Image (cartoon, rainbow, N blue to C red):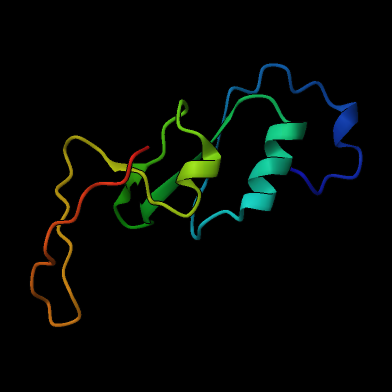
Amino acid sequence: MLNVPDLDDYDLSSLQMMTTGGASCPIEVIREARARLPGHLLELYGMLECGFQSHTMPDEDPEVVCGLVGRPLPQMGVRIVDDNGKDARPVRPAKF
């Protein structure tokens, strides 16, 4: 959307939510979207075959959560393993 040459000619006032996925959205793109578009930009993490499993939240500061995969959906389980397939030890959670 940001690459549309005449973007400012469109009435986007009803736009409430945008999502991005496939790769982490660069912070520069997030900043431009926040400056030029209404609504919230969420980053999703998942697979085409089974949908998304986690996402950032509208009330989270994009400057803080950029590059993260968000919080898992309530019905999803999350397991983090090391390079050997063993459960990684817990660390203090990031403050969002």
